[in-house]
Length: 493
Image 1 (tube, rainbow, N blue to C red):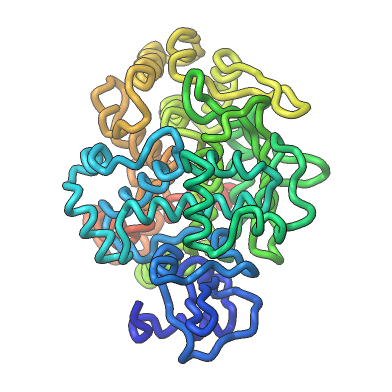
Image 2 (cartoon, rainbow, N blue to C red):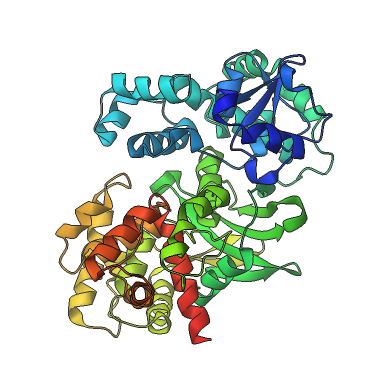
């Protein structure tokens, strides 16, 4: 990375600015390690450092991760991707596939989903990151393993397989090559208060401040399913819910409860797993939690893009630290969207609770009986008759059938073939089920009313205004959507 291209990085490093945590990494030539910009170690001289766009880029010039600031704990950042939508999807898919220990990383199927050649994908990674897709995936495995060794009491063998390595021998080899340290040596240096129960893990998830935690929890609370979501645990106020990853015999069921530690710019996340849990799916579970809570958002970049909107629309109120409130899956997001068509939020959540309680199942997680959102097959077989128009019941039933017959990798745009599903439903599902950052729901009834107020305070015509707003908000349209929803709630209050 060229220092001249990012002059603010030097100041961010010197001030240990948490807003840049995970946005870049600092390589120290004299020690051979790389750090987060918030590292508490004595600051090296500027002539002895080099800046990297990612941890993987630092690792593949021979640097080792710092044992004090732990780069694997930094919030994720794809700032180096820029506005390249294809590369953003590729990075997300590779990070998911990297930690799937049941399969090697196969580039050809991945490229088919992206609609590009493997040669072009390699070119994108080489140009933007300086490493191949396979090396990037391997480093994702290594950093997740390092986090588990530091923060949990899982056995080294469990850590190896949970991180996507196919053998303990290969895990030890890669660990030694990259870190010049064995897993057992790192475990000896890990926190003494690490979790002792392999079915009850506690992880720390750092974020870049500010984080409007109270607004996110309030959003979840208004739309909660009783028994599936809760907001207090062991005297702490926060957000918890059940999750199941995978299908059939490989499924992993669990629950998490997260609460904020604002002074440390992190969330404390307690994870409870079912007995005989399939630990190979633990990485996907952790990634899903990160997505639901949107811990990897970049508030500074988002606000820099959205602030110019205020100049032409003075009535627009922007809240820095807004997060996308995710849900567990595209299927859940689609169900929520269908039940929310042409009814109030209160009525939609009443219907959702009736549906989940009727079709979902309860399982013992820790000491609690918890309710789980139903799988598509179970929901399709149940076909509950909710108090709503028959046409909407048919749409819901058709979505259950479609999701049962297709895998999770299908594009939600294909839902448009289902009668009763339009662009709003697909966009809503992408925003909350995939946490896609650039979804400005201009067709949403509440957003329409908010846009009308903004349009009245601008000098632009109706169609011109909407086109301008979508363009100006990109690639952070989803965050503007949540801000506008919040403005509507505050104006009612």
